[in-house]
Image 1 (cartoon, rainbow, N blue to C red):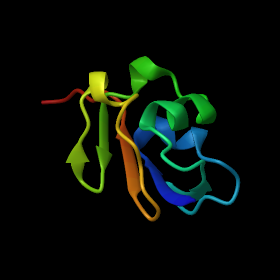
Image 2 (tube, helix red, strand yellow; image 1 turned 180 degrees about the vertical axis):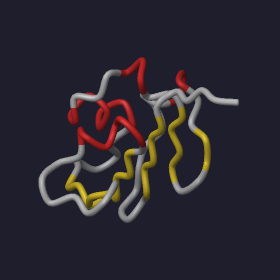
Image 3 (cartoon, rainbow, N blue to C red; image 1 turned 135 degrees about the vertical axis):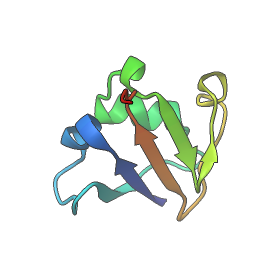
Length: 83
């Protein structure tokens, strides 16, 4: 199944070939989880601070058990600081 991956800030360098700006469509297995995709893309887990599926926050302890569906958008942000 195909999902859209959006990686922000320093994580954008982990996008697969063919990415446009900060996003790419990715073919994944049925019921893939955010954790599986994070591992597949080689993202450092400690840098995956905020994870959203279709705009809904997924807590760290739910990322391995929450399944994606066809057409879902998975967005991931690293920790940010500022003031």
